[in-house]
Length: 132
Image (cartoon, rainbow, N blue to C red; front, side, top):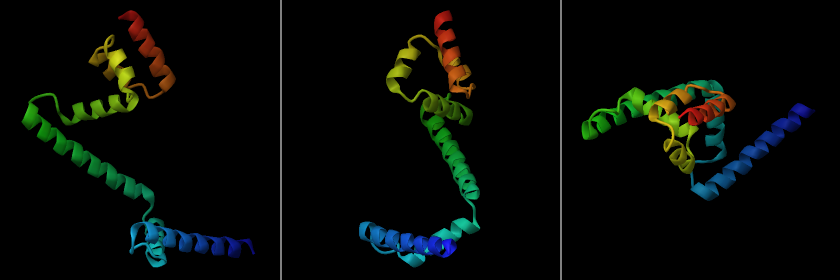
């Protein structure tokens, strides 16, 4: 009984979603297309999709590295760009980064981003500021 209710509810959700998507974005989001998308993700788990996106991301970074190096010269290697991205991820708040960069060097940031645990990273960040 519960299985049929869940199946009916799932079908209802797909129909409702299809209507809302077609109203918002136009044709191409009908029940049939949504069922196909659902089947695609059941057949090809998200892990393969994420891997594909990561590989595309790596290609983008490599291309960006080549273009920046051609335009600005040294300092834009693939590994340098990935380190810059990691610093941006951990220190995305511009005001905070500006304040910290008054005290810490780029080398400090490169060491700090190797610490995944935020509590530990903040501890060593404070230690670095205190010892600077």
